[in-house]
Length: 185
Image (cartoon, rainbow, N blue to C red):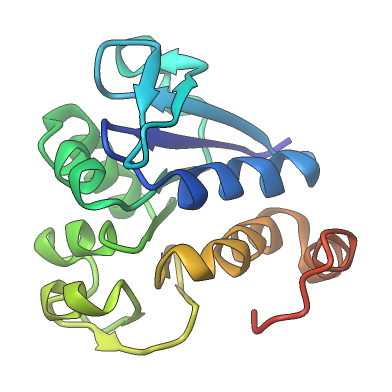
């Protein structure tokens, strides 16, 4: 079974984070919600507090197939400021393992040189931070082992793209139908 980790810092965008968790769990992917705050409960950008499965310090990165970074301005800042998480993002990328980010969070990949020569998308006001990328306005871009999503309105196609990576296109299409999603993927 595939396993992914979604990382939460104070101010994360709730829909972006939890849509990925929900869709992937529905598809049978093992998902851990991981706090980088040192606390189990993490409050999102709209004051929704969610209990995490793990703290960063309790996380064994050897068991994950993908690391996911949700957006939200403050959440993105909190994720990027966490040196341990950034070291893991770099290590996953260097080993060809999957990394994903949506909304403001793809800027982290841009700052780290990960998007050079890749198609990528982000929230419009962060496009100038996608250094070296072929920036698109699509809802989601999958470029080898790097997945980027545009923003809150693209949370469902972003989650479905991650599900497709680990479960195949037929399973992702079936999930889209089950959740009554008929938009662009």
